[in-house]
Each structure stands twice: as structure tokens, then as C-alpha cells.
Length: 274
Image (cartoon, rainbow, N blue to C red; front, side):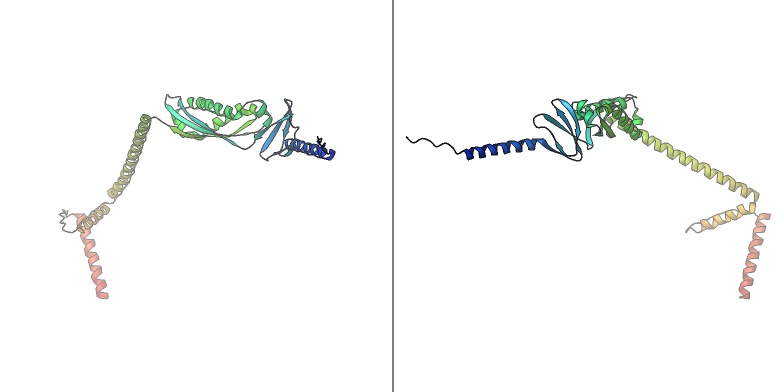
């Protein structure tokens, strides 16, 4: 029987070379990592921290180093709606939004297991504590101050985790239906009170002006008489109106009559001259 020919030595070397090249490519692929500008890589070597690397191209030891990539951009946490009783015993439902970013990647990895979940749960607790110590009027009118207070407390509590809380915003405050109706009635009563005050102030100013006018007429009776005649002229302008007005024949009436005759005489002289 013919015996099988052994494989040429060159073919075995070629296969070994290709296999070695493939292994080298795999090692290089696992050794080179690209970290984006907004990311940082925390490298562990055999369980110990090597350091924080990036951004850009980094080299790690394959199968020995473990890399945890941390995003440094601002994260958003939507705090679920919480039912809270305020300081003045009013039940409200409040939700909020928390904005934070990782300031120290090493602390964020070593100190807390899942910082996103931790920030969410901590935000719920702090929200209930702060709103529970506030009255309803403060919750409705001092929203900005409460936001700053929540941010300050959360920032202090998350600082050991390497987290920086940049902002906290209360989204919506939901009141019970009965409280909404009571507040509407209160607002309506307040508007009526202001209207009454404005009306009374107008009456006071009008009375003061009338008092000054009465004093002026008292010092000048002729002015009061002329004002009466002017009022009669204004009334006489109305159509189908008959006005009966008593005329007193005294010194005042004689003076007015003389003034009228003098005015008529001067008018006739001007016409004659013209």
C-alpha cells in the first residue's frame, strides 16, 4: 500500500505564523482602548487600582486589567412623585428633577456601588425631609429657595461619593381638591377686599376735594352763583327738558343783572363800530 506523504515543513511554519499573528492581533485588540473626551477609565490590575486614565488612547494588560468607564457628563434623575405632609398638616404630592455629574471618578467607583441609584434614593429622602419641614405657603411662593436648599443638602451628602449636584428643580406641586377650592375662595375674598379699599380711598379723596371746593365757594359767593348758572346751562342743553329755577331778587341778583346789561351794551357797541 502507498504510504501518506508527510506535510511539508514550510506549510506547518506558515500555519504557526498565522496562528501567532492572530493571537497577537487579539492581544493588541484587548490592549488598546479609546476613551472619549467626556469619559474617564478607572483601571484595576489584579483587583488593585492602577489609576484613572483618559481621554484618548490607553494601553491595558489583556486578561489582567479590568476597566470601568465613567461618564463625566451631567446626569438627570427624575425623582418619582412623593406624597408628603407639610409642616401645617397639608398633604401634597411633589416630584423633582436632580442634575448631577461625576466629579471624582475614582471615588464614584470605589465608594458607592451604583451611584445613579444611590442619588435617586437619596433625592427622594431629602425631598421628603425638606418639604415636610416647610409650610404650604412657602412651598408655593418660595420655590426657588427650596430648590437651592435641596441642592445644598444633596451636594453635601454626595460629596464623599465624588458626585457634584449642579441643580434641583421642583417640577409640580399637586394639592388636594378641597385645598384648591379653599385657596380660590381666599384669592377671591382678597380681590374683593382690595376693591373695597380702592373704592373707599376714592371716596375719601373726592370728599377732600369737595371740602376744598366748598371752602372756596364760601369765600366767593359769586363763584357759587356762576357755578349754578353754568349747571342750568348744561341742563338746558337736553332736549324736551323744562327747568323751573327760583330766582332771588337781592343784591346778588341785581349785581348779576347789571353785569349782564353791561355785557349786552358792550356787544351792541362792538356791532355798531363794526
